Image 1 (cartoon, rainbow, N blue to C red):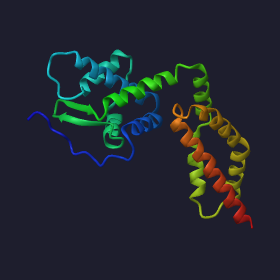
Image 2: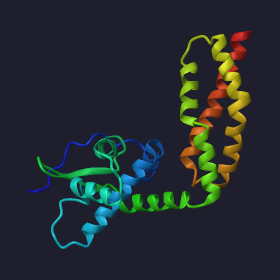
Image 3: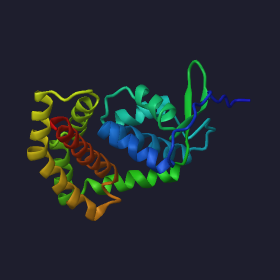
Image 4: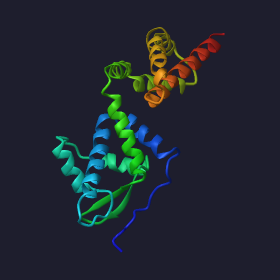
Length: 211
């Protein structure tokens, strides 16, 4: 038989839609471009009469990416899409070919259309620009670093105060604006709310350690 499925890891929690949104949120614009190119390659194959071994293939994906002016090796993100996010799965693999199927192609297509609409509205672009300018992942990482410490130092406490009076008001303002379109900013809101909750927890620690 031509089909040769690779051993798949246990699928992560959440629906395909949730995993796709997380993948796009964590890996940014290039992830969206690769996923969109894979969908377009699959649509091309839908209209070709020759046999296929899956929804899309590596060589065809690379060709489609070059047509769109994307000079990037997709191998690492393809592995993540399969092993970490389980939104694609190997349908055939040999020494010269690698084919994948989308786990839920229609679901993924709908999300990509949604993401495209998300970046076509000027106000939405404004909010996303403000969100990125805050560097929320870097901020959250710094807060986690401090939180892992057994005792907060004076430097740590100063950082926390700077977050409270500098970053936190901007974070809360963005939460209020983005909450009006919760489905549109689902992943962004999750990260911003983590910042608020973790900062509050750290301030409580500061208070208890000062007693």
